[in-house]
Length: 523
Image (tube, rainbow, N blue to C red):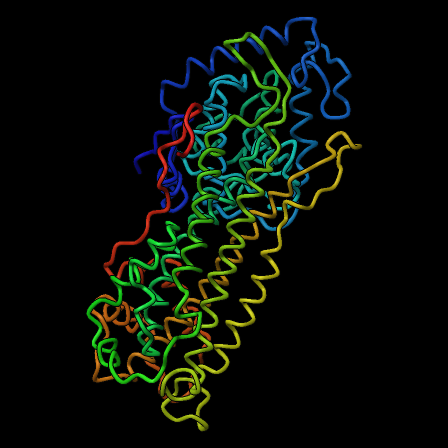
């Protein structure tokens, strides 16, 4: 597979999504090497000198005041990594771990970390040959870097611990032997540079971003299906309504919904003589709610794109100024805020989608659809409990959407006395997206069933293509049957983007900003 060439400071979300989704290897653009080598030379000089420089010839954290002899530099870095391998819990998913490794390349490639190029070359080689460290997903509080998980990554580079290679979990040393690579012996500051950063939290947040945006796109498709299924009005999609407010996401959502519903005979059939004056908010306010959530996700995307390109270890080597300076770029507060924003957006997309499901199964509100969307109510329960499942998942997501970044606890003998909790704030997004995909999958099933009850009146061409794609995997519901498999298949079609692709309708773009750089922000 062709590697993704990453330019530190200029790498885009699209490049990172390819690494995440396709497993593409990554390597730095050759232009990064000069800056990396200059910083490494400064660290080498500091390690040989007599002046105490944090992380180079001193202890760490609360032990920073203790000076380390030059001959103990390698031992210092080795001990740092092994002592910090304290992660617990299930391992990171392979694609998220590989994304984290690519993010570490970007951070080191900024030329402010002081590592030798050999460190970067080994990370690139591991990505190219498919060596993925087994990294426990719990143990980071998101400040002073994602210390424990990144230590497990660094330990694998040193030949310690386990890795995944060709689908098997084996010792790191065995993987290196099989691929003719050699473990690294860390030099001055290199261990600290590898673990002092936000790449674990950022990788999980990016995974939540990419999968969450795909769910947001699907929500536009499923909500259009629902609108036709309950014979909802398209008047609230009138362009002038949304331009008068001016919110970009709302405008984009309304535009997409209009395109999806354009040409529906079902819609045209009730323009005259419909006794309903207004639809419930879950139909009428779809652009305002889903569009707002999309704007929130876009804001988080910009933060994460910047963070992905950032130098986030400590101390940083300022080569132009000739200084090695301790700071706090390892603090993952921006990532924590971004993850919380995404979580709230996912929760709200699911909340309004669940109300649309409830609307369709209720014969009082669904405009003459049969109760619970079954042709024989009473004898059959239809989608009764599928709707209950969406309610359970909606509530679960509401609880998980509670902000994590507002939590903090002092660690490391009060030296690290405020932390971001970005790690589990980002990690929870995966479960939230899975829940949302089920909610939207059930909505697709219900809405397709509802539209089919409107026959012989056809829906729009885009929505009919969506229904056709759905029916390739899940048949219409007649008599009651075992439902769990149907829900799983529908959720998979949401997660894969298959239903969105079937619509063949342009979707809103995730990023409307220029590629990141150290000198330019989003206008």
